[in-house]
Image (cartoon, rainbow, N blue to C red; front, side, top):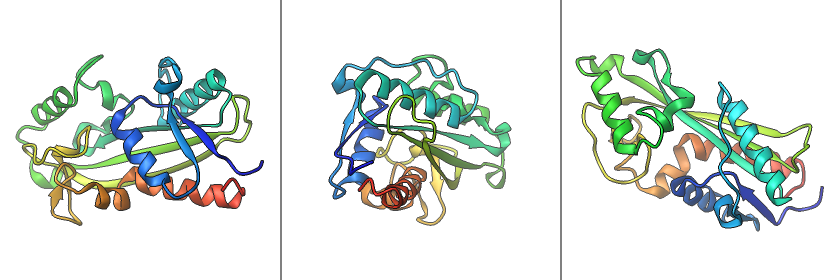
Length: 203
């Protein structure tokens, strides 16, 4: 396959679109969020991040005829038996806001000691050249931290304000986007994806 110029991003999440576009900057690839191409959301019926990522990428490629990249990500908390996992975006129910999800997690972890509040973000990226791609490229990465007892900072999105980043002694919500784009689960998974693109001569 020759160099890729355009990819549809199978997400309407503004935070993800912003982060992925920034990380792809300089590669000569235009990343278009599926919302701009009127692609409807597809039900995420998988029980793993990989299954959901493939469902979303295939759907976006099918609707647009473009190569598609999808991100399925979430957070797992050890004290919650790896929950909320694939249900991170709807942890507090369908249509839940980030604040709703954060509050539910803080409530469930009330009284749990700091050392037992370990958690990690996961990101699975899937790239499909077309809807029937038999060999999608899949990369994954994690970002280790722990859950704070109260939110800090108003940057980022998702669970960032309550996710403590030990390497920088701050929450994900206090971390500058430039720094986050070097160390986060999404940044690392995307760096791995860019390496795969080079191997396959897509860029």
